[in-house]
Image (cartoon, rainbow, N blue to C red; front, top):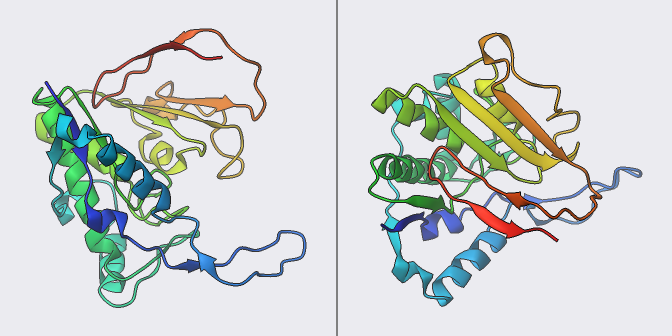
Length: 256
C-alpha cells in the first residue's frame, strides 16, 4: 500500500505579496522585501522529493476546489465570501497579519480539496498514510478571520469533513510546528470529539498562547493538549512514537 502525496505547482506559486519588516525598538521600516510566508522552502522540499525519484513511489492525489459547503463547516460564510470577493480583484487582508494576493481563494480552495481527498483515501485504507504540501498555511486561522498568514484552517476543515461524511465519533490532530496552532485549538476547544495536540516552541507565536494549562473547556476539557518545548533543551535519549488521525506512523530512532 502506497503513501499519498498532495501538491500542485499552483499552490507552490502562491504569492502572499511583498513584506516589510519593522524593527521593534525603533519602529523604522526597512525596504520592501519578499514576504516571510513564501514558497521557497516548499519548492525546495518538492524538488528534493522529485530529484530523489520518490514521486515514483507515491500515489499522487490531484487537487480539486473545495466546496463552499465544506469550507463553511468551520468558517463563517460571511468571512468566506469576503475572501472570495477580494481574491477575485487584487487580494486584501484576511486579518491579523494575513495579506493575500489575487486568486488566493482559488489556490487555498485547491489545497483544501486535495487534503480532504487525501484524508478520505487514508480512512478508506486505499493509502497507508499521506503528506500534503499545500499553501497557504492554516493552523492559525480562526472561524471568522485569518491569522498569522493563514486564511483558512485547512486541517480543521478536512477533519470536520471526514467526521461528517463518515459519522466518526472521534478524530485526533497532532500539530508539530515551531508555532502554536491557536486557530485549531480555538475551533475545537469546547469539543470532546476532536483531540488536539500541539507540540511547539514555548511562547514563540502567538504571544501568550499554547500554555500547558490550556486543556479545553466544558465538554472539551482534557481534549486539548499543549506540549511546550523550551528554546534550550538538554539532550534526550528516548524512543518517541507519534500517531495522527490521518495515518499511523512511528519514529523509533533515538534523539541525541
